Length: 90
Image (tube, rainbow, N blue to C red):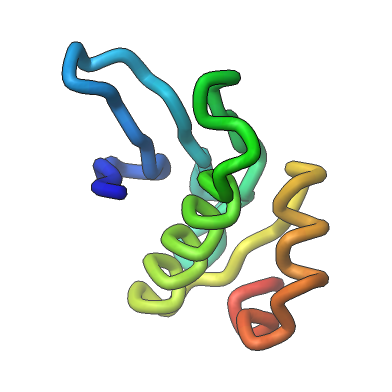
């Protein structure tokens, strides 16, 4: 799945440019973001898209040496299930 990487957002758009999935992570300071929202369109539910988005976000933040606060309930659960990314969580 090809995601679009934007400032504070990783998204998946269909061929028409419609947003089908995203994770958002606004900056809270120079070294920290808040993963605050995960969205997956009904047409993609049950295909592991949210998990792919979260992994992409974690890898992206790690590459930028940033930490994440987690206020999105899906992000909290995902990071609990993936302790290999605990270094990303503030």
